[in-house]
Image 1 (cartoon, rainbow, N blue to C red):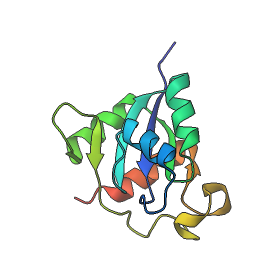
Image 2: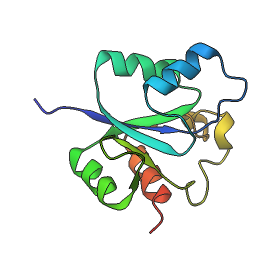
Image 3: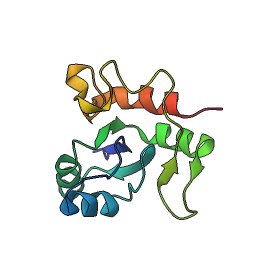
Image 4: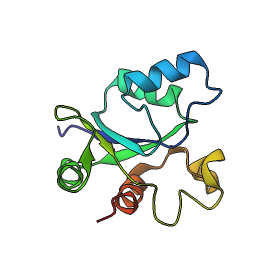
Length: 124
């Protein structure tokens, strides 16, 4: 059985954020907006992502896509799976970062569409 990987992109900042949410974002290594991190999908990672769903967007990616991003994006640290990206070309969504992806916003689960967002964030 193939392992499932997810990409998690930080969308919002931390002004006025509950300390528990802020701590969860730190544990996910998402300290600043426009950072992306890749994880194997486990129940603990899924729980953390769902806890911070109003501050991040996420979806499934293939291992080949992760390798493509590794070659094009700048790493935050050498041994980390955290990447600093630019804000996406043409923005996050029609309604911006205050609404969920299902309502044409930016935050929350976006499935396979996360790849399109990350590609727009990699400026070459």
